[in-house]
Amino acid sequence: MNAVILESAGGLGTLDTVYKDFLTLGKIFNAEEDSVSVINKMKKEQKEVENKVTSVKNKLKVLGYDSGENHPFVVAGGLGGNLI
Image (tube, rainbow, N blue to C red; front, side):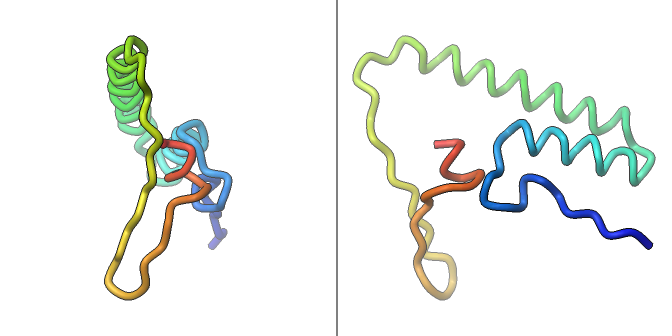
């Protein structure tokens, strides 16, 4: 059995690494067509959001905060920070 470390799991996750991870998992589970379908849907939705916010003139600064169940943490990097 081989171990797989997903690229988006680390502190440098981006949407591109998420897409790569979906392709990797699609190959592992013999579901490549499904993974491509999910990626295409995600990219379409991403483009729709980008088109909606391009015309926004007064962009807000955002702070991501998650209290979780134990200790609070602030989104500062990785996939969450890159998405913001």
